[in-house]
Length: 305
Image 1 (cartoon, one colour):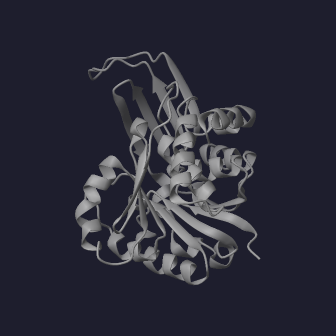
Image 2 (cartoon, one colour; image 1 turned 180 degrees about the vertical axis):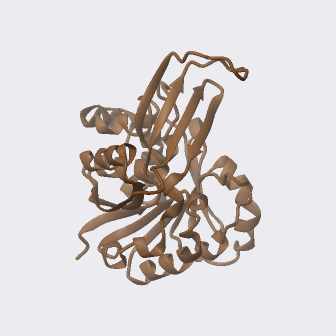
Image 3 (cartoon, helix red, strand yellow; image 1 turned 60 degrees about the horizontal axis):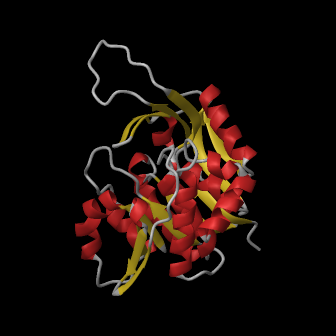
C-alpha cells in the first residue's frame, strides 16, 4: 500500500521579495522598496507545500544547510503538513536564497544556489520514494550533481509503479540540455512555461514520433495548453487580483497533480491548475494563499476549481 500520494525532490530555500523599486537603478545608489516578503521559495518546495494544503499526503526530499534559513524553510514545509524526514542538513554549503525584484513589467530573479546544487542520488532513499504513488522533481537545471542519475532514477520509479513528472524551470546557463532528452521517455508529465517550451521545442520535436510525456504548457493569464502526440487540450485563464506572480507556475503544477492523482481527465486537470495558479497570485509569494485554507477553498470554489 502506498503511504504517500506524492514525493517531491529538489531545491528548498526561501524567497526574499522586494516590491516598489524603481525600474532604473544605478550602481552605488541606495533605493527604498515599498514592501517586502520573506516566504518559502523554490519550485520544488512550493509544489510540495501547496499539494499538502490541498489535502494530499506529501513527502519532500532535498538538502539544506545547517543554518537559520534552512531550518526556516524546513519548518515552513512541515507546518503545511509535508513530511520532511528526508530533508538532509549539512554544515556546508549554506542554504540557498532567491531574491526577487518584483515589477509590474515582470521580475528580476537572483539566486544563490548553495545546497541546492549538492543534492545527489545517494541522498534519495529509493525505498522511501517507492512509498508514494507519484514522484515529482523541479528545477532540473539546478540539480547539477543529481542530473546524471536522473534517467535511471525516473526509470526505476516508473518500474516500481509510480507515475512521474518534471518541471524543468529555467536554465541559468541557457543551454537547455544537461541530459534532459534521456529523462523524457520516463516521464508521464512535463511542465513548462511558454519560454521553456520555446527553448525546448527542437528537443521535443525529436521525439514527436515516439511515446512521450503529456506536455503541459503554462501560459499565464491566457490559461494553459497540453499535448501528447496529435492530441491537444486547452483551458482559459482565471481572472484574479494580482499581488505578484511568484510561485504561480508551481502552484499550477500542484493543482494539476492534485486532480491527476484523482484520475481526472486532462481538461479537468488544466481547469483546476489554472484556478490554483490564479489563487497563488492573490497573495505575496507562492504559498501564502494556500496556507490560508478557508480563503483558498472559497477562491477555488468561486473560480470553478
